[in-house]
Length: 291
Image (cartoon, rainbow, N blue to C red; front, side):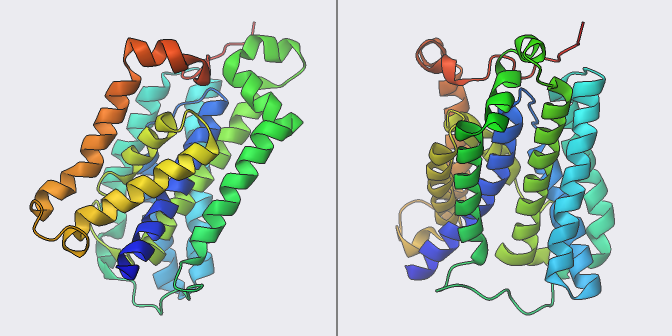
């Protein structure tokens, strides 16, 4: 049971960091539905770098850097060109799905390195995830930078008139978001499950996307949701540890995704939009063209 709890917290850490990146991007008005693709790039290239050099540090740095570059690419299409953000995000996912399969195929198999030391049985990234949530909440809620980010996500035209550089602020957010997503992918492949295989993330990025909407764009609610989904994911892998004999493992495998779909459907209802719609950044997904 203790191992189940530890693995649940490890899984929740990855959801937290990836979703936190998307939350930051969305608060500035930029939607990226390609979280899975960014995570695949970070996980695969981080895995390749770590295995080739024997350095975990280099592996994580590569994952973060690659995520930042993909965030920059998404920003170019979404901010500079004013393109459709959903199309750009889906392109990133498709590209990540195909290209990482080609890049990582020669490295299929276990990482072959000594596991990263734990802290009282917990992955050190769990504590990093908690710290990132606190930092994100503080920056978004208590600083002038956070006010600027929230302003460009609500009404970029008014923010521009107020002296805020909308493009610069959004680029800062999408690059930071990409770095966090790449970092989350690297944590998956280097710490949580250090074995590379074809399409090994299995939808984690889409669960992270749903978590942002579930959280009402609040970092602390996002953390709570991540803990829930981390537990559900681990339950889907090892249901016999908690609920032996209740349904087959294949039914449990569908639970996290069924809940993800349910959350998104619930949040699309008129009741939810009427009662909680104010939490959504008004300019989310809308390109801003400076007059």
